[in-house]
Length: 411
Ligand code: NG1
Image 1 (tube, rainbow, N blue to C red):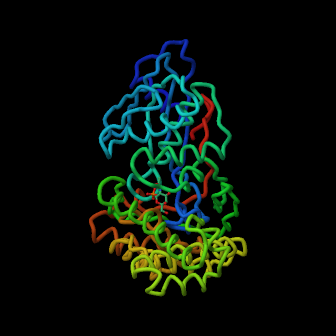
Image 2: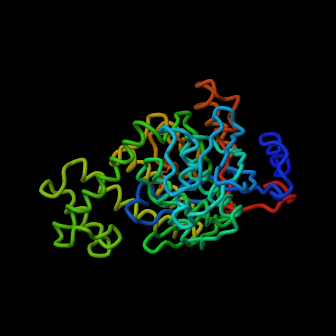
Image 3: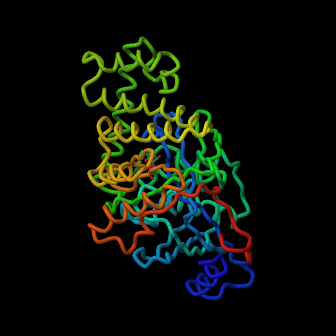
């Protein structure tokens, strides 16, 4: 759907707007695929994602009142409304409208007098697929509200504000998603460092192709998966505290500082000792520090156009997420295995896991073979070969979120 069609659908959803409200604008916020650096953003360690072409788009218009009204083009999501304030009560857990509320509440901290918008939400991002459709909605909504109210927040500050803001939905998440959705550069993956936040792009080599494949298992953000996610954040924190104490460091030292204070080998040796950490905490810790190392190596491999090295790092990351971090799923493991058998240089689960998608890397010329193999060997036996382009697609490194000029060509 083009931006013009979306603006027309807006008029259908909300009725002809008063001329005083001005033109209908459209904001686009892309989904993301994390290439490597999984479950370590909340430890403050660098990650290496890129933005996708698929996005959440919102057609919006300012209102004279403080109420925001939301309509979703996907009829599974019922219309929703809330009044702008610093204490917007959440809708029941799992309600899509909470992501819009999260954005509004975060902005209300800085701008207490914001008026609301009418907003029509559209998305071609697979939902609950580990591709960050929820953060794309948070970012799109924030940009719509800011544009409608004529307020701005510097980009890095906005990334941090919305990263914290999304915790409103109950996930103790890190800041990767909001940062890449706002700050991605077309054609590049970006290393994101936290403390202080900064993005460093690396061009994706022209003959590399990243493929995303959904496992058909939804990675729901509510219920058990959220609990498991939050549990991991606590375990990492506890492991960090105990290792720091054994090292004679302050127990509030950050992961980056811990890694600066001792070598990975030293840390792993210490963490492997029964006297320091339990078996579970030791495995969680091992994932975090080894994954941190893999991010640096992967960034260097991409810069050197070393596809084989990048692929091996993807495989090692998957193994670590499966065995040490225990966030994989048999269907993700199967997809990874099939992608590799079909000629991918490497593959791993991407996003929080517990379902969702994998990302695989191959030379562009091998991509059709890998895709065909996944279609025939994964999707067809599960009765999903008909819809395969919705589940299995090339990740095109895209630009970050933006408000599109009315009347401009499709976003
Ligand atoms: P997804 O895949 O969107 O559930 C979550 C967190 C990220 C990061 C990854 C795991 C949110 C909004 N996103 O992503 O910050 O921790 O898991 O690497 O909480």
